[in-house]
Amino acid sequence: MREETGLDWKIALDSAAVLNLASQTTSEWLLRAEAHLDEVLLDHAHCEKKAAGAAIKLLFSYPHHRFLQEPLAELAREELEHFQQILMLLDARSIRYETIKPSPYGMALHRLVRRDDPDRLLDLLTIAALIEARSCERFQILADGIDDAVLGDLYRSLLVSEARHHGTYRELAAQLVGREVAETRLAELAEAEAEIIARPCEWVRVHAG
Image (cartoon, rainbow, N blue to C red):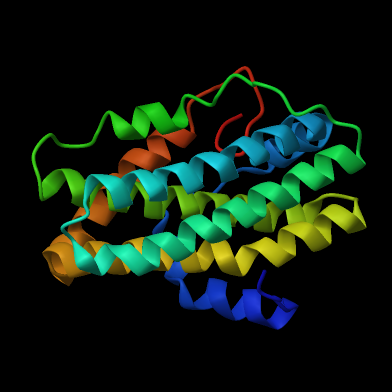
């Protein structure tokens, strides 16, 4: 796993142009996350596993796009490393790894995916970029806001990789359809993502609540 320094993640976030998100998470989410921290950590483990699976699914669905192969393979490998890291954290805190009701966030975003390629692939790459961006934003909130030095260090260590993953998906989208088309679609879906993340949710999740 890459070693990330505090300076590195600050530079990464600054260069990500506010991660192309159309909204910021409110302080209420941090308060709820702190009150349900075991639940958030369990959801985080599932998020890392799903992120790896999404990258691998793209590799198998689009083998004819050579430019996708190495970047997505590397991304999936890193997501699996993070999954293992969070599993170890759960074990250390005696949090049972089990099935959890997923946030409605991901399903709502994927309902916006258009049917035919290249639009379909563009939307899948763009949504993945936005999910990584929102993860990065919320990991920074946790790193700065929770009163737990171990978790603070953990989330700081993950920030730069999340920002990099956002950038990877964004660049792949630009390679697919050109920068102007990709950035226009990113702005459109970012507005939709902001509306979806703001919807009330009874559970506290990395991407909801």
